[in-house]
Amino acid sequence: MSPRMNGLGIMPEDTRICVVMVGLPARGKSYIAQKAQRYLRWLSVPARTFNVGNYRRENAPQPSADFFDVNNAEGERKRRAAAQAAVDDMLKWFREEQGVVAIFDATNSTKERRKWVLDQVSKEGIEVIFVESKCDDEELIMANIRDVKTSSPDYVGQDPEKAALDFRERIRNYEKVYRSINEDGDEDHLTYLKIMNVGKKVFINRIQDYLQSRVVYFLMNLHIRPRSVWLSRHGESLLNLEGRIGGDADLSSRGEEYARKLPELVRQSVGSDRPLTVWTSTLKRTIQTARHLPKHYNQLQWKALDELDAGVCDGMTYQEIADQYPEDFQARDEDKYNYRYRGGESYRDVVIRLEPIIMELERSEDILIISHQAVIRCIYAYFMQKTQEESPWVPVPLHTLIKLTPMAYGTEIERYSANIKAVSTWRGKGSTAKHEDPAPEGGI
Ligand code: ATP
Image (tube, rainbow, N blue to C red; front, side):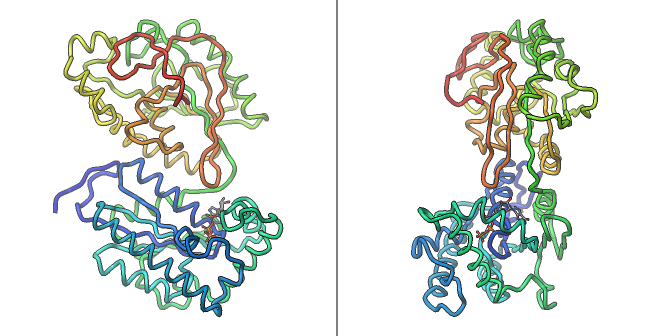
């Protein structure tokens, strides 16, 4: 068995997992599924969600609640066909596209249905882990229905109030047959994670290997309290002025001006006096950028937030790198994500060291991160689902505060410019220009 390397370390070549979601409608299954998919893909683990609702919509685009009644034979037939089509595509993806983690997103709310999935998937030598979201907080469920269900394609063009009532009725139909995993004590052989009331309590049963436990640990850390993550690069540094990369320089006078303006920018974007927790790197330019923030903000320095290590090229200009290491310069442009500076790091390396930061971000509430261009690109790529081809080229201007607000199925972004001039540190493919203006589109 040859090992396979990705952002979660070394795994055996044949590790394949199917995460089977379980739970009544509006319990956050799709929310959990898309978060897990995003996290795994960011770590270069091939992951894909198969949502049975999307398959069902092909044959029943706008069903009313009685479609989901167990006594509705036509509804049963169509729902089973949708589940079968999703399982077939999922197994094909494992076989033909070297899939590693599939997420089977459906209610799977009966023992029979769980056994049916388990039998088909385990026959192919794929591990199955059930992830159940159980929630009896009626207020939260109604909020979920209003937030995401009334705008679902199932209810396009319908009155939201009527849609919410119909969805509540749909849930009642599922409740008639729903069995929580191992509720009757006869599913103890299953591998599962049961999340009760958004993580107030969790049950873990028979989790086996490394990848399973990483996925479980990630899912245990999710929460749905409203919050934002703010990202800022340090203020302009003395080395930025010279077009030199890396180093540990002080701020320029304009960088210092940004540091003084940052508290106001933060207040404006927070919209209240609620305090943030501030994370900086261990380098002078980020610590100096944070120094005028209110004293009651907790500040923490993370080595993991230090800039991408440019190894032997640290402190050089792009022109010097192109002159002294022409092959390296070209190799980096060809595959910037994977190119590792001699004695330094690649973007891939940075993502791996940022994994604990992402885990901590998921657990936390309002955090302001003051870090560096490459690091911010990697964090941004996680939230905005940027590919490995795109993320190393994203323009992240100096003297700009970025606010990311995670929503049910995506992330909202707002930008606050300090309107303080700074050099551009963006470089286009093939260029050695010192202070090039980025392409207008695609920036954050
Ligand atoms: P359906 O079966 O209809 O597809 P679902 O279970 O997939 O429903 P989602 O579409 O994921 O439900 O519901 C999203 C809502 O659930 C979001 O508003 C999100 O904040 C909330 N949510 C996320 N996690 C949980 C959880 N563990 N428990 C309850 N609600 C959650």
